[in-house]
Length: 417
Image 1: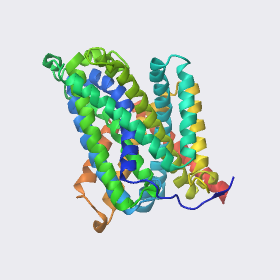
Image 2: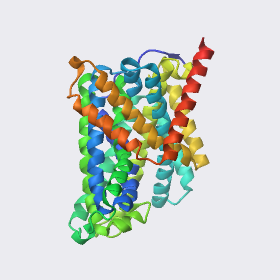
Image 3: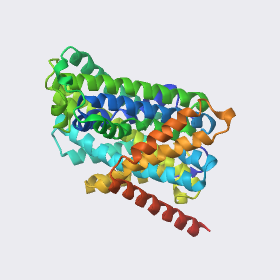
Image 4: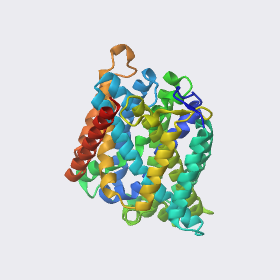
């Protein structure tokens, strides 16, 4: 096997970039987290969803502005290094890896559970691990192949959600929206923080910036299209779900849309929802492998991670070591099956990541800015407010994982001296 350390090739167009963004956003959030949010805020979680979408939009515009000027692999890791401080850049990259690896484990388990409902021929765990192996293989043989597979996956997911919306809209009962806000502003705020994570997948586009055609134009467009499409889909699906079964029923299950489907009269709707959930999880998992391996590549180039992660396969032009390591870690997480500590810390981690994104956007010189400075300022305020609305144990565990990463960084740099 021959390898080199050249740059990645630009193989993705606007369609591919949007599909990767949507594949990262439309997953566990819409099929699972909406039910949890419904239990926290009642029907008013739809307001929480809009608030989360607005804050995510501010972050998305900051990411688009930065990616237009710095179209390299690594996203906020790169921006933090260039515009703020190497330690802040590292913090963004490390927290991205922690949050996305934890999320990949959860999504892989979720995919196995949903596919088991369709094909109870083997165990859910077998399906989870098989999916990881197949997606690692797809990633290994080139970004273009992975992009084509992702486009098919996200198309099936979106079509299933549209089928759900169209058939469920006529069966909405307005009494299910009352009382609208049984838990008041506190419930809305807590649900907003929870739902924010559902929108954060658009960062995957910026992380893959080195593999996108004409990134200065394509990436901002792809990010904006992704976030607008995601908000519209999330709101429409949530209105139908609440209108058909109410928030109490949504909150009582880990598969709220499947429960809604049981109450909608439409041919094959339950099968279509489960199939859509399965492909949604698969799409998120594919995008996680893409994003994590590219972040490992960017961090290893600056000796923030071991050097073997920066080599690029000569034939397939992918960071194959990062892809294989990512797949191995996710398989271990699936086998362990319980990593709540890391998952809780991941919630704080991703907010820290976007806090650094907005700080970097504010630091950009005026001639590089595509949006007014008020946009990253509002995104920064939103991230900080949501981060410190989380339980104190989550915040402490998040900082503990960050400290562990910083110590690892110093160790790697000491070894390489």
